[in-house]
Image (tube, rainbow, N blue to C red; front, side, top):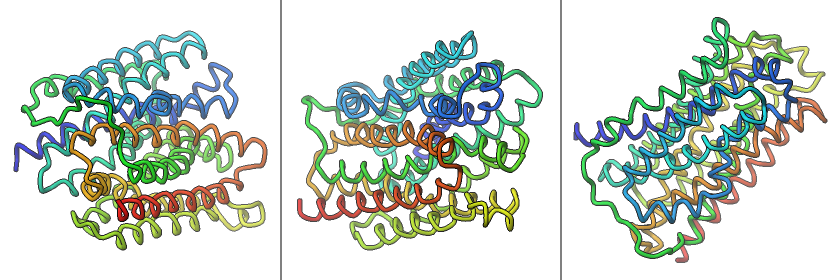
Length: 392
């Protein structure tokens, strides 16, 4: 048990450090915008560009990665993130910084495909708890990236902070090469995951659009509208992201390893509906804003994220269950993670610039109805996946 969980925590940490590359840029946006003269939409794209590789190549990369050792894919991805991060820190202008983020996105994609596949192989009977832990890698990574970067931005240049995060990714590399041998189910062909997995990934993608869209632009919103400093806005965003962990672990205990569909769908409904309601006071209209403060808005966003953690945990814990119910071979786990990565990355890529564009043209209060609409689409994807799996 001890050896199994040490492996699981190592793989989770690799994902956390990769996801921190998303959070670091969100916290540093005010400073980077000032130095490189970025628009609000352009700044949102800078945050989410790390997801470009997954958004465009996730499914193909998942199929290809299934033919190689997961440890090799994970190690290569971590190295690529580190090299690209150092290049970003040295970039003299926005164009080269965008290019470095694109390269970084390929490394990030390799990590988020390989790590959960290795976790599924190592976890055994603890797969629900292990995958629920994995579902927190983005909120924990974003929390670490935003909080530490936001605090450091008050003292040192943003380029030095980017260098720190590039080197931090290498922490797990030595132990990655020494991971215990696992019975990896490699694909010999190019079979694609069943339809239920694609529907589940669609629901997850709509969720990441609203989740990462809000988190990515939250520091800018808190600074511009509520007057918070860069350090304070980064800290609030980090706490907001970290709050997701509460919902993820609650879902792990409630879902378990069973195949019943009613409870997962109920948890998804709660994890989408309640946060959508809380985003009304979090992004208030002018009439409502006079009754609120920056502290009240921050508390509403943090609570919304804590509840929304239910959705991510259900998504990751249901994936192997849907494969098993559909009669799909275990070799499709890695390919299915690629599909998940593609839809999740597409949502994360679209979210911040979408929120930034909408806020620029219609004001920040438009975020609340946007979240409500995306929540409905997300639930439809989850419900369809359960229906397709039940008829397979």
